[in-house]
Image 1 (tube, rainbow, N blue to C red):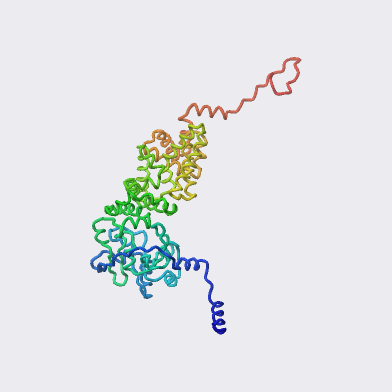
Image 2: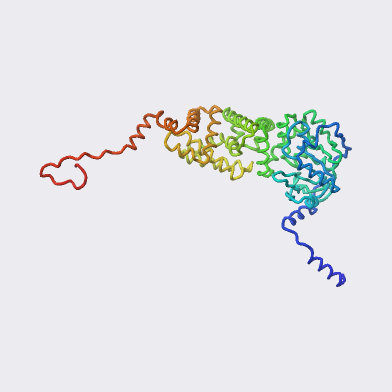
Length: 484
């Protein structure tokens, strides 16, 4: 290289803008790496359903998603709505969010939108922000034999940033009913995999070889359960049969990701159906092994049925639900077994409860990564139970002000409604005490416990002053204040 060329290159390097740490991470993700080859599926011409023959209208899509679609389209890129948003509208449900897919690369998407951020390493996605609403934009993905940043280890997809065309992207999706594309250019639907037929027939069907698809991402087993429960669909035999042999794959999934999937299963308004399907397909045993070992106890099953029914009813009424409350119920029976074990060893009630709580939560987070902020509330709910079943005292006034009282009280009511006879009386008493005025609360504390009330009055009664007795004649004065 000539000195002149070296000088020019040096000046270019100096003037080239330095990338931020976030941009460097994204570039590292986008660098090509060695990947295991997967045989691509046979290419099919999609069924194109014109606007007049389907029910999806722009008026059913959020304005933010429509804005993203048009901005990509007007910039010369392909832009489609895909996934759950399309599926839910077609079956008459209100979608929670809308996902957009395009042939624009993540960096190109970011350059189009002012409020846009790239996230993820396993899948690089663009999040476009419209106030509190986020529209997720993904780039078409292809099979891993095309190169790019695709990594597979032991059959599992570790990194999946291999970009392709819409024809390739359709065959990379998980279920046929999630592979329907709404084209903003002419408002038509594109169906590559028979998704419209499965949607009409109410069938959950994997795209491609089921065993391979589950090995690539074991969470797809949970997604099949969730969609079947949510949509009241039937899982196709070819899709359901391998699940019975593959629950052990969930052990290799990140526990935090499993926690998020559990919330989707149980906080989408169909938790009872999800629970029953998880048990039917033996997946519950791998997610909650301690609880699964207790399900031969009818009381444990009744408690869980009540908490799931209660959760679904609250969601229907648009009331808040608590992950800590749900997990406290899921792990209640294992906790009782551990408490009995420590009590038999001679530990006090409080020590047994503390030790059992620690053991049960420690084992559970090895399967489902419960965040610490949630596990602390679970622990408080459990600690509140013996406090709510002690004899009445003036301490109950202070207990009403405790930060975990309401959660503990609700859990006591749940136990009573599930038929726990040991707490029925206390649930009724606390309901009256909680909702009563001061007079009612005083009556509950003292009127119903005459012996305890008398003892309380006796303890606070002032001692009478000793009567003054005349000194005996010729007796010395009493300088100690005693008559003896």
